[in-house]
Image (tube, rainbow, N blue to C red; front, side, top):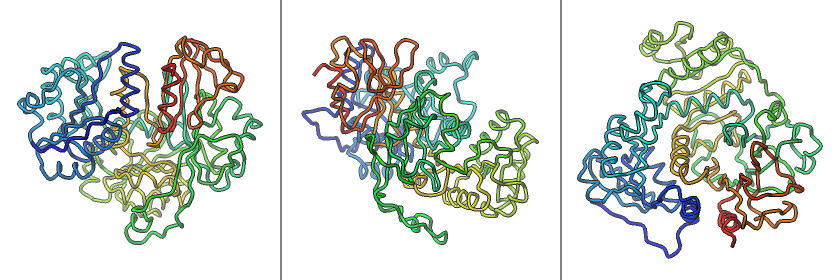
Length: 512
């Protein structure tokens, strides 16, 4: 057993303090600061890095000493070389009911068996990652959540389906690059990029009150850039040309009314879902909501599942799937619904795609296994046809591209999985969601009688400057908070907070 244990601190992290306080307050579930992760591949390392950074004690199990060595270079974690299905490992580490157990290897069966073994040790929180489409929870069938609970899996994550659902949200919400749904999907916090020629450029936030579309929408945060890279050329390595090894000078702020909007800013807007119709056109003057065709790059399992899903969702739209290898294109063609048109073409041959009808009324989704091809083909599709573009990426570096390149949205399956894992870890304690910008959180609190906010007008209460109340839920009523709103005991508040302000926010609800 190779160990690199975190040094214990006298003061717990803000994150663990938050979870512990809420667990004690609500008396819902015993919490532990220990997470056992089986699998040190890309997904495992990504989850490990996030959780370690939030103060959890991590035990990472994998059969490869090389991968575990890499993990210790990333974070200060305990590692064990071994098989995740070996019960002796769990006896050695004294796995128990308070621990969180994650099985995220590349083998679905290994993950499911590992969770089943963890259940015999009384572990209550067990999460498995799967890839195959037939491993998923389907309510009102024999394969419902109760079945998976008996199998030892509390939460089952199918990474491809998470990705497909995210793409579906992006298609249904034109102009957004990210959306978080809350309150049973009745409200949302959505991110929009201010594009060239946008009517938003140069406006101050206080002036948006005069825009009818913003009457019931609140700007809760802005991600802005202090310096943007020069427009890149397209020869050579994409990462090298985009200077992606260097940090981009961006920051997330809770803006004041005098903030002046700049081109390239990401604005996070909070509001009832039905109020967002038409918002996208303010940020992108060339945005076209309607579409007639969908082009999907790649013949992977994800691409095929996506094509079949979109065909069911949009039966009147033309669906094309592109593959550059003849043998693979034939196999894909044989396996898919005949209404999906399979094209044998290079990902960079936009002329051929335009002959098939790629235009500004199309959606181009690059979902191949090569993220360089995905990014470059989206840039070419946008330049040649003005189609709406969505690119699948794997590396964290590429996830920053959407902020300063002409790609409408970038989807990272790994990040989606990590965010849903974090959501699942916190779900039984409280509704605590990570914003996609890792320097911010979305928190929900029930206002206790003892809270200093009770019976206070928001304009009169000194709320932390790096946090903002996004929604007030009062029974069935949804309130977009303005200065005159009076907070009442029992209200549910959704708060968008920079991580630097979480402790101050927590103190308000602890009565400190």
